[in-house]
Length: 406
Image 1 (tube, rainbow, N blue to C red):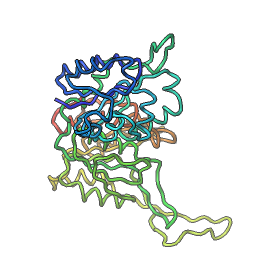
Image 2: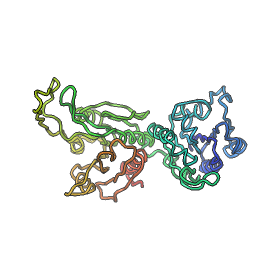
Image 3: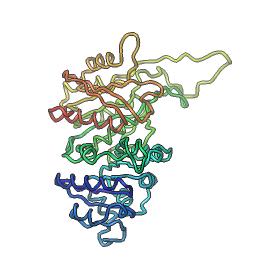
Image 4: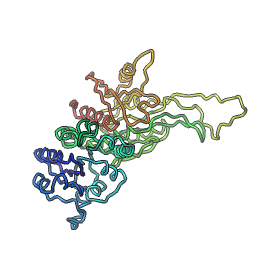
């Protein structure tokens, strides 16, 4: 049984939350309903209390002796906001706590899911788009609204999905955590190979996918250590953080933390090459026409080294996941290169995605294929990077727990 907070913001779709509440209660979960102040114009407290079996209030000053606006968030295993109006999402993105529901959102460490419902123009307004991006970046699961009939004669994206669809979409959060008791080590971001005190060789990785993987693994019950190399996004709460800069520093950090881990996910974009010499002073332009010749040397293959090291060290992770950021060419497709890399590296899973300018790196979405060393059929995932991360973590859990999760 989970302790669930069901937040209901003031929109006409609030009636669907009544049906979701029934589904949650029939599944055996404890549900505390927190309506915002105007929900009573759509559904009254008597309905919420009758179906939840718990007292219901929107007032911060009720049950002050139990510090209600903090207690509910602290005790929750999951917080749902259904429907989430544009106003509620804006206040949550701004970190406001001007009612019981937004106060609870600030006070909880539990996973948060929001199901927006509003008119199309409101959903597509730049402010709502920006607020949605901020919430997702912080780890909130924002369910895409459905397209269909809205209030009055309007129709378009912004309709609240049906309660059964919402209920089914959160089953991973309602069931026992897939990685409960497991230790997961994840690398994220892009390495920088120094050339002089000012310049470096780098890549376009922002670290968004690795951060999403860390959040998904945390939500799946794992104890997560994140080795971060130049993230452009903040790391998720609730994970241990280790910093590295270059490929050599990343290698040192990975080997220092890999023992005792159950899973290693090598998501960081590691430079294949580094300058052979690092200059102590900034390289100067000596005249208008000459340019320095930069000699490169290969960086170590951290993934392959870890796989090989397991033969003599049983304390290294039993499941190692590689990432292949590939581009196709006349010699082969992205998947061709991915399959060859999986065979060459010897890891259990390889996540393959196509990269390029404005493609995967630095964006909020991704499309991947998860390949398996044992020959299982590839699993596809597409959507926001947190959505992709959850699919990858499901496959990792299936591997470490001895069964396939699809």
